[in-house]
Amino acid sequence: MQNSGKYYHFVGIGGDGMSGLAHVMLEAGCSVSGSDLCENSKTIRLRNSGAQIYLEHQPSNITDEIEEVIVSSAIDWTNNVEIGEAKKRELRILPRMHALSNLLEGQRSIGVAGTHGKTTTTAMIATILSRTGLDPTYLIGADCPHLGGNACLGRSKLVITEVDESDGLFLGLRPSISVLGNIDKDHMNTYKTYGAIQESFLQFVNRAEQSVLSLDDPNIRKFVKDVTAPFTIGIDTQADLQAVNIEHEQLNTQFDIILFGRRICRVSLSAPGAHNVRNALAAIGASFLVGVDPQDAAAALFTFQLPQRRFQILEENGVTVVDDYAHLPAEIKATLQAIRDGWNGRRIIAIFQPHRYSRTQALGAEFGSAFRQAEIVLVAPIYPAYELPIAGVSAQLIVDAIRADTDTQVYSLSSPAAGVEFLKAQIEPGDFIISFGAGDIWRVTTEISSFLKEGSFLPVTTGERR
Image (cartoon, rainbow, N blue to C red; front, side):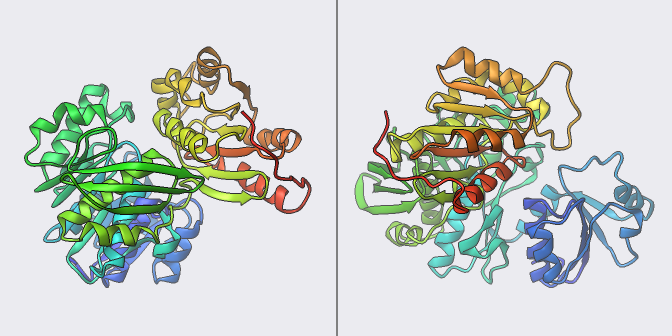
């Protein structure tokens, strides 16, 4: 890896992307320090691996040994005291995406992009290439228990990375292989128009030597003709790599793969829903482009486990409790459909925590149809991340959209904690409870899971509803 032996400081080191990059640099022999506002599993892992971790932002964290400062996209550059100190010292300061671009130089790289599913797809590719002996470096946007974390330095020249489009800086990357599963409306504070989002993804794809594109996504189909020799995947469309004969049974999904018109094998995947079939197709396709036989890729995926907070089952004892990171309308819709396909007949109770005021303002009305498959929806207040409130924007926009578009029972919560009390009073045998959101809504389903385990509620398996 380039710059082995240098000393890097990470401002916002506890995030998924930042911690993964810091971990790889540590393993490569670099010295690493970093700051964040609170401890988490990633900062603990980094400290145990030799990084110096500060749990506050202070000018004194920028020590004499530091040669380069890497900054998270969640950090305000204008007001952060560590960035100010680094500027005084005339240190090189880079956004994380630029530092990632430096890491990929001279490597055979796979960059996984898209509005939805990129964490899972990246984890699937890492699983395939690791299990088939190619020993890749990988950086994934969530912890993956079966891979030992969210990042690893491999011994080969292969690098797999999740690519975040939120701030537009991903156009500085030039991966060997680009993977694009879908394009949807998000990050409107960066892109302003839907057309600008689509154009940015097209530019990203065309910066790569090869590409894997999902033809099932209508926005990708619009520009596939403008991409040189794409490798295409799909379920609903004719593609180079296609999934057919799909069967869903709770967490297990099975399907046949067809490559260039020839049946290869059957895939068994521990991940529900058609969206995860598409993620698997993209992973098999990317692995094929680096020389992995699709049959070997399918065998490797048999060991795959979903990353943390991606349909994470917390309890399965007459009542199923799941936590999920989905926070956009299309993601929620796909996940609820996966539940309906794999657990048909269950009453679905969804707890949703909107993420950021700007996203709620831009997409609030679109959440209405996303919850049609749920019987009950609880909507918590907005999780702001680093944003300030926007006048007239609240979770009520989403409550109103659901009421206008569905017959679903929808309730506005005063706080996530109110959702815990609601559920304790309302749980029935056979319920399927799922939390959605990128914030801390997972605390609700974690507490409900503990409540069920403690025996305060003793469900019994019942027949199917609906």
